[in-house]
Each structure stands twice: as structure tokens, then as C-alpha cells.
Amino acid sequence: MSLRSQQPPHVLFKGLQGKYGQTYSLKMGSQSVIVVNQHRHAREVLLKKGKTFAGRPRTVTTDVLTRDGKDIAFGDYSATWRFHRKIVHGALSMFGEGSASIEKIISAEAQSLCSVLSEAAAAGLALDLSPELTRAVTNVICSLCFNSSYHRGDPEFEAMLDYSQGIVDTVAKDSLVDIFPWLQMFPNADLCLLKRCVSIRDKLLQKKYDEHKADYSDHVQRDLLDALLRAKRSAENNNTAEVSAESVGLSEDHLLMTVGDIFGAGVETTTTVLKWAVTYLIHHPQVQRRIQEELDSKVGWGRSPQLSDRGSLPYLEATIREVLRIRPVAPLLIPHVALSDTSIGDFTVRKGTRVIINLWSLHHDEKEWKNPEFFNPGRFLNNEGTGLIIPSSSYLPFGAGVRVCLGEALAKMELFLFLSWILQHFTLSVPSGHSLPSLEGKFGVVLQPARFKVNATPRAGSERNKC
Ligand code: HEM
Ligand code: PLO
Image 1 (tube, rainbow, N blue to C red):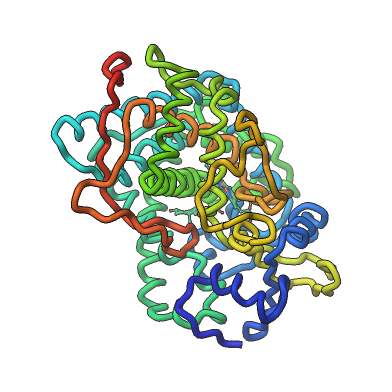
Image 2 (image 1 turned 90 degrees about the vertical axis):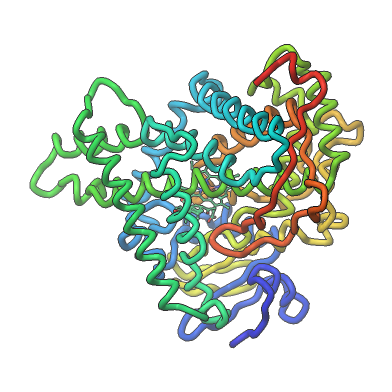
């Protein structure tokens, strides 16, 4: 089948339900792909039969990015994959919820972000928040992965912004080119760009790796890279003829690709959600006002918001949930693959079949969400407006099951702290003469909003708790 349409794939797949039903299968060359547009089947794939559907397809572009699948997100289901997920999970929870250090790291970045906004406001300048939000989020994941951070204008950071956008624009598109011929418009140019960007990223990763190796100590674990090096050392010390560090998936390539995944995911996902949040807050000043009223009454002016305030700021939490619903970061997740013959509902599924979960359809299902294109944080609150709810099972912003997002807890902490700090101090609006930012995303491995400028106006009273 060849489908000619200029709509992005998630929107087109949603539209095809009218013709083919909620779950349908497409033939792409020799490949069979099943597209799931409803939560019952999505939950069957991700949760009930999670292990059976835990495979990932190999594609040309993800192989370039991950040295043939030696990472977590695009790597196939295997003992190595399980091992790396476990190490990352352990390293991230070392800084996890409840522990003071991650909160301190995020708060320091929130403070520095607010200072930049203050300076721009004092100079009467409208600001493109994208690089500022990216730097704040990058510094958090940089601390966790490499125990380092970037200053404004740091050339390494500027290079990172550049190569990462190049990767987002080109990677993983080829899993869809058979059904979306227009994605193939400049395949060679795309592949060249991807290779160039990956090689710049790899140099950066290699440099961090070499530095860490040089001053590694068994007695201190500074970050994720140290945790990975420790696992490698320990495998090397127990090395026997049959079991080497290489054979259990602890080669240098594997370590570099895992930390590259976490760094890449850590930057691009959370930044994208913050940008969508700002976009929607500008479109809905009444939502902004209500969050600020909540902040004023529960946190006040005397101090900054903390993670322990999360329970008393339900409207802000509901807003974050609504942003994740209406503009899911990964509208098609990452494709899954059946590892054995199986089924989805009444469909027979052969081993090797690719399964695309269309999260966009789940999050915009008219039977599950009233007016799904309307931005309404209130749908995540109980009738009294005091408690959080998840009103439908058709909500899976981080996926679910064996392949569930590894950074969910971290991302939620960042979204809460960055947004609460910004809105405690500033009101965001569109500069006069500018039109409201577009709500249409640019489809890629993440769904990104267009760039736009904002005015961050200091709120009366923010002087009392200067950032
Ligand atoms: C996978 C969402 C932040 C690391 C995923 C998936 C989704 C997702 C939908 C795919 C699940 C699937 O294929 O079934 C999000 C959202 C985020 C976010 C909405 C921010 C709000 C992060 C962060 C990190 C991270 C901060 C790293 C610290 C990963 C990894 C995977 C993943 C490693 C691959 C898991 C696997 O294949 O086993 N995420 N993510 N994510 N995410 Fe996130
Ligand atoms: C983002 C660009 C980076 O330079 C490399 C990178 C690594 C991991 C990817 C991430 C990119 C995009 C978002 C992904 C993440 C792994 C999991 C996450 C795909 C390509 C999601 C949302 O599934």
C-alpha cells in the first residue's frame, strides 16, 4: 500500500480507522505492520503480552545512531538490554525521588533560568525560550550522566544543540518510508546529515568516557557513566574464558550507546514538553492565572517551590498531564516487534511483525475524551477540583510495561520544578505584534513545537523572593 498524504503519520493513522477499524495491518514491502489505535489493544501489547512484544525493529538510521542496536531504546530484547536497563535504573534512582540531590540540581538550574528571564525582562526583550529551556534540562541530565554542566554560550553546548536537532530530524524516519514516500524526499541527504551529527555526538561521548576512565575510582560513584564503568570493571575482574565483559554486553560501544541514549532522551523529551507547556500557557492565560493563584496560596512568596509541594498543587500537576495528553512526545512510541507467534484481540500476529502503538489516537479518542483537541487541565481533576484523577485508560504518555520509559520519574520532577519556578516569578505572553505560536507539531522521533518568542513579565511581588 502506498498512502499519499501530507498529514503527519500519527494523524493519518488515526484517520484510517474510519476505513479499516481501530486496529489494522499494513503491508510495507515484505514487512507486515500492525497499527493499534485503541487502548485495549495497546494495553494487551504493552502490558499483558509485554514480553512477547518487547522486540525492536532494526533500521538503517537507528543502526547508525546506536552502532547496530547497542543501546536501550532501539536495541532488541536481550540479556544485554535487560542488564543495561537495570544499571540505568539503579543509577537514576540513586538520585531518585525523595533524595535531596536531584532536587538541588534541578532547583539550581531553575534559578539560573529565572535569572535569564529576569535579565531579558529588565532589558525589555522578548525571548526564544528554546535554548534556555534546553540548557536547563541538559544540565540536569549532564549532572546525572557525566557530573558536569554547561554555561551560557559554551561552544560544546552550542554544538550539542546543533547535532541533536540534526538527529531528531533524521533518525527513525526510515521505519515509515514504505508507507510515507514523502519522508524519503532526500534520503541520501538525510542519511549524510545523520552520519555527520552522530559522528560529532560520538566524539563528545568518547571524550566524556576517556575522562571518566582516567579518574575512575571503585570507591566513588559520581554519575551514570561511573555506574556503567563499575559494572564493566566488575565483569572484567570475574572474567573467565567463556564470559568476558564484551560477551555480557559491557563493551565500550555498549557503554557509550547506553549513556548516549539517556543523555539524548534526557535532553530532547523534557525540553519538548516544556516548550509545549509554554505554548499552551500562552494560548490559555486563564490556566496560567489559576496555577499562579494555587502557587500564591500554597507556596507564597517567601520561598521557592519544592518537590514536597507536588501534592498541594493539583492544578499544576493536572496541567502537566494535559500537556502530555494533547501533544505526546512520542506519538507513535518506538515501534515494537513480536518475538514469537501471538495475537492482539482477534488478530493473529506472526513472529517478526512490527506493531505501532498510535498514542496520538489513544490521547485523542473521542469516545474517551470530551473535545479531545481542547486544552483542559480540569479533566484530570475530581469534581471538587481538589484531587488528581486519570479519567480514562486511554492515557499512556510514557508507554507501559517492559519497555516503559526509564526517565518518567525524573521527567515529572523536572516538569514540576521548572514550571512552578517560572510561574511563581513570571507571566508568559506573546509579544505585541506577534501572533500566537502554532499548535501544530513537527513530526519526527519526537513531536516538536515551532519556535516562537515570549515576553516573561515579572509578577508583582516577585521582588520579595528574587531569583
Ligand atoms: C522510552 C516518553 C523522558 C529515557 C520512552 C517511550 C515513551 C517515552 C513514549 C517509548 C515506550 C515504548 O516504546 O513503548 C517520554 C516522555 C518523557 C520522557 C513523555 C518526558 C516527559 C525521558 C527521560 C529519559 C528517558 C528524561 C532519560 C532519563 C527513555 C528510554 C526509553 C524511553 C531509555 C527506552 C526504553 C526501552 O526501550 O526499553 N519514553 N520519555 N525518557 N525513554 Fe522516555
Ligand atoms: C534525540 C537526539 C539525540 O541526539 C539522540 C537520541 C537518543 C535517544 C532518543 C532521543 C534521541 C529521542 C527520544 C527517544 C530517545 C530514546 C527514547 C525517547 C526516542 C534520538 C522516546 C521518546 O521514546
